[in-house]
Amino acid sequence: MRKISIFGATGSIGQNTIDLIRRQPDAYDVVALTGGHNIAQLAQDAIELRAEIAVTAHDARLPELRAALAGSAVEAAAGPEALLEAASRPADWIMSAIVGAAGLAPGLKALEQGTTLALANKESLVCAGALLMQTAERHGARILPVDSEHSAVFQALVGERLDEVERIIITASGGAFRDWPLEALRTATLAQASSHPNWDMGQRITIDSASMFNKALEVIETREFFGVDPSQIEVLVHPQSLVHALVGFRDGALMSHLGAPDMRHAIGYALHWPERKTLPVPRLDLAAAGQLEFRAPDPNRYPALRLAQEVMARGGLSGAAFNGAKEQALDHFIAGRIGFLDMATITEQVLASLEAHPGLIDAAMTLENVTRVDDLARQATDQVVTQRTG
Ligand code: NAD
Ligand code: MG
Image (cartoon, rainbow, N blue to C red):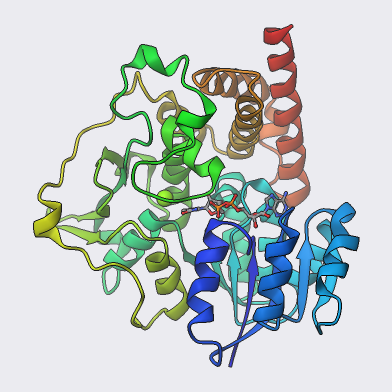
């Protein structure tokens, strides 16, 4: 039996992971499941999968979790320290699917036990890619990509040499607003930004897809995962979301990975790697799909992509500043305090203000320093929003 834990079990990636686990109950011994406010889901899954422990990120929800688990053998715990304790419990495979920078500390703790970390939480790589990679190396741990584009690149690289790679192309659906006139984006509502044409995902990444912040994070994620130069990474808008990525080699060959937009493919690949097992994903019917379209992203429409380039050029802890500002701006958009396009304007402003402090951005990449930059970016974002809204 493989021991597994799922961080962010109640979310979109977490539930897709559980869907795969549930189909082979005898193959897995579930150690920890973690969630946030959805206590009923967390408790139900923990009981069904006979988890050792269920953890909610929120201290105040502990009594409710205890009550929901009453009569079962599942332990209940809450809060950031409990998440770390759960991440240190021995497991052979750990899914990192918390959303946002909050996934970094549990991810690092998991790596310290020398396990395999299936990484959906791209924000941790954006904030602290080198720290994650070094921690994995030091403890003999392995990080496997779960983001669909990065899983696609990883699969296209099987049997290949990284030094023969010329370029990596990741695709972007273009999100909810890909066909809207730029001017209309100014007044785009939360409901409009929260519906994705192709993928069924958590609300935050869905909005980030409409603004291309998700692709901006993924460009940085590509750099951190595969160690390529920023100039070798390209983004292509591909409305059908069937080609997830392409790898170009120095002889001009392009290897691509295609599949239906179903995250259980990438999750299942990471779960069974290096083997391939049968997965319950729809088989792609290319004749039915008919057309595969590609176009270059319009830089005026997607300032987030330019910001990603600037972050990679600046290096240091600028990724943490970028992600912290972006996450906080997203919170303000969700709360209705700022408009859709303001997210990029404010993120750019905050990034520039933090980058003006070399002592901050060039500090050593430790969890403490990353957390400090993340906190400062969120505070600076709040200040900008307060100034704008009065
Ligand atoms: P989601 O919002 O559906 O779920 C997030 C999970 O994290 C939930 O279990 C929630 O309880 C937990 N969580 C939220 N805030 C937390 C905090 N502060 N501390 C601890 N736990 C917290 O998100 P999702 O769409 O499943 O995305 C999860 C991660 O996977 C993100 O990093 C996202 O970018 C990445 N990802 C998601 C998809 C997708 O299809 N949903 C695809 C690629 C990558
Ligand atoms: Mg992706």
